[in-house]
Amino acid sequence: MASELELGLMELSVVKEMTNIGLGNATTALATMTGRSFNMSVPEVESVNLDRIPELLGGSESFCAGIYMTIEGDVSGHIGFLMPWTSVQSLWRMILGAEPSEPSEISEMDASSILEIGNIINSSFLNAISDMTNLTMHATPPLLAVEMSGAILDSIAVEASMNDHVALAIRTLIHDFEGSFEGFFVYIPSLGGLRTLFSSLGIAEAA
Amino acid sequence: MPAVGSAVLVGMADIQVIKHTGQVGCLGLGSCIGLCGFDPVTKVAGVVHIMLPEAFADKSVDKPGKFANTGVPALIDAMVKAGAERSRIIFAMAGGAQVFKFGANADSKLDIGARNAQAVTQILKQLGMRIVGQDIDTGDYTVRTVTSGEKTLCNLKG
Image (cartoon, rainbow over all chains, first blue to last red; front, side, top):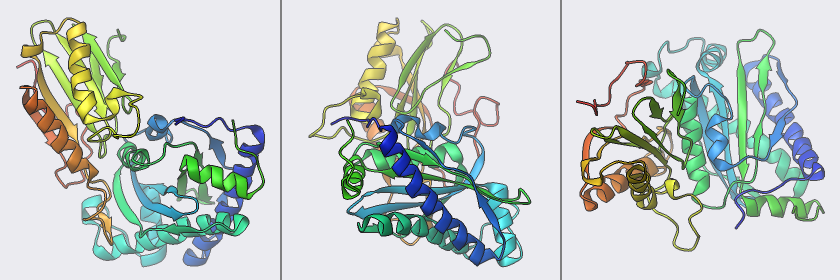
């Protein structure tokens, strides 16, 4: 089985468009929850080798929170939403009015609020793709990590490598206008899932 | 050979070997294992960045460094090729964490880190190799930067 999938311009632009819609959904959900406005940047879509995923965000030693979900159904895969530590702190301030100053001080309430936010963000992203294609995508309950970004992405890549090989990763940015919040998606459909996705949209399988 | 002061970084599923001087290591280990071998006499050092415990029975192995059962022997072979004496190589390992600690089924799922650590330990034992240092998941949140001296895993030179 090929470990990489060469995406043509057509496939890339379709993925980009889906990501745009998914990201729009996620941004709206985040704004509704926090009562703040957020902006999103045009997603960068890259077909990358699984081994390179830990490098996607650069600075692999920067401290992040990551909410990760496995996706089952027609388009299986993995989705993770990563935020730098200071961004998670901003989120906590917006939602709970206070924030832990150190990762070791994260309470159950802190953890579950971030898990829930991550859950909603990831799910709205997936719903957009599901609506567009009429394919089912079930997300498993979210898991949260507060760690070096490299370690979080490393662990997601390991999970992805257990089944199908990865074909694609998407990097996007949601940020607020004060510069206090930013977050990135890493969406990793399985090779089989991506093929199902493309064929449901009437695009012939990529080379 | 890297320039002085820069380390050879070992990406996922990769194996790198250096000789005499320099640094070799992994950045951002999560559930993966960074296994380092060193021959104190010939000064050959090598690192493999292992992702999974065992190669899949139904798939060919594209990169031996990916799995513990193929990566450990491959690291030893690469080091011997670079001049190391097999029986002298000592090992240290780091990683094997459960990075996703919060969530409804965090305990039951994603235990791949522990399985990785177990597999590497077992394979080294089977091969009669010596582990002199390890830092596998300790359950805390400290960012451990070994190179800056924040934490010394073990001193292979000693």
